[in-house]
Length: 92
Image (tube, rainbow, N blue to C red; front, top):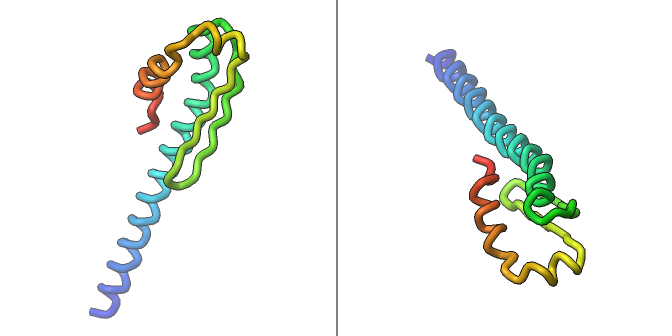
């Protein structure tokens, strides 16, 4: 009986570690894909290559996009495209 619980505990621990590892892998791979595709997408939309900084912790994703002042002056509704961009590129 003791061996059964020991084996069950080992299998459960291994399954939990694998599950957490896969969640972390999906999150990191999604962020990498985002960091590669977002500058290209914004370059096609605005005609200028922006500076994109993406920082990720376990529960927080920070995206900073920097354009030149000329682009910011020309586009007054800059929040609308970013809302649609965030729904397109959200890592799952």
